[in-house]
Image (tube, rainbow, N blue to C red):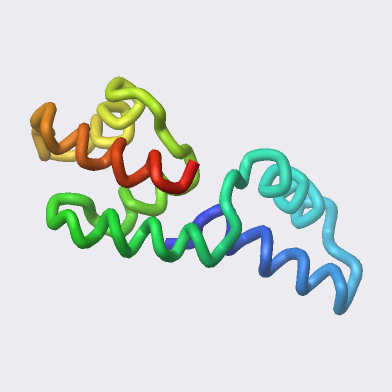
Length: 101
């Protein structure tokens, strides 16, 4: 699963090589607006979240893209999962994210 920072880097490189399609231009514009971290930090954040043990890689990427600041934001990310996060787990996620803000 690719984070916004990954997509941004890929499209930026491709733009240097050739003309982007209109869809690619829109995707790059979206990434530039909403990507909050550089790729190195995203990879470190995803790795650190994965080390918690209860965060899957797709959810870690979503967290890195959204950078939630509140418990409710974390709950929304996990809403479709069959995991019932406890308050302490949400606090662990938020403390990891806080390091990268």
